Length: 423
Ligand SMILES: C[S@@+](CC[C@H](N)C(=O)[O-])C[C@H]1O[C@@H](n2cnc3c(N)ncnc32)[C@H](O)[C@@H]1O
Image (cartoon, rainbow, N blue to C red):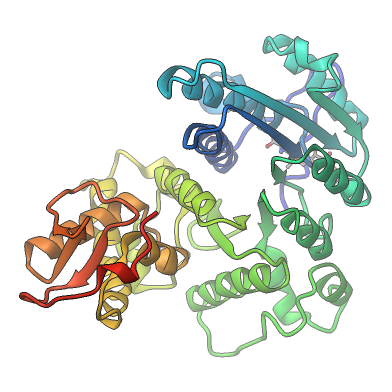
């Protein structure tokens, strides 16, 4: 997969150079973990929670950054710890839950002892020594992830609370669909999985060959990813992504699945970050993080093969040379794309639909974070296409609430508010 040059020396005397798409992956992970903690702990009455975070392919904890004079660049396990701490600070000091009691445990796994040794050294240097000798807080396991999965799932089950698995292998045979299913069936669990789509692309032409076993036994993908001649490369990519989402929804058992494309070259997706969750809240949080790190022009995508949100390395290097502002263009494209998505749903609900329900029904098939939904509703309301009702009255509020009712303009039409359950 081109990443096999990524290795760490036990004493930290060699750290691998970080690539732009790996940096994007790390930043998404970091944003997500921080907001996950804030959402889990900050948005309810509780004052106590257990969480377990598992980095199943943790690596040596630190890279060097060639774009920045080979300065150190933190890897996933160190970022996970730091972002849980940062999230907890926000819960305590910005959400005024000063005495919040968060019982967080980290489990770091890697098949190479050198990588685990290096990670410990890097954690020490990063000021996280107190984690290294406290097995209640942090466990290091040297071994292959897959055979350990059963034990990990039962440990998480015993600890109760919520869990997060970061599964970032080099290849596609290191995590079975059966394991994904076990993790998902824990309930309050989420996964970010680096899914090597390159392998699937090869499979299309070598279906009956040596890849078949991995495909049927490990991925359980029989009946998915059918070869189709006539697809151009971008249509094919779109198809592969949709099949990936379908596979993880059906075989992984996750109700909410979302993807983010990583493109080290101009057009071909090398891997997807696939986020799997049982709750729509988790998907809302990941979409915000993914939107922030997307650098793909959405307008361009809507006209050609759609890969959804993603990060392209050439685009990253060309930034700054562009005349127009991609971010603004993307916000425009995202809000406009909601027209096709939301209007049919709003129109099919004669008596109106809760804002929350409208969002949940449509969130998996567009790139738009929830604030774009609000902008869209606001625009349509200005054009008198729709009305928004709150507590029995029309509201002009721009900040929508989950229980607001969106309804097509009805000029005095009466409808039954009692049929809506306010949350
Ligand atoms: C892509 S690197 C991980 C990078 C790390 N997640 C980060 O972002 O900083 C993949 C790691 O998985 C380890 N590995 C490979 N096969 C494995 C397996 N079957 N089980 C556990 N670890 C494995 C490798 O030694 C390597 O350190």
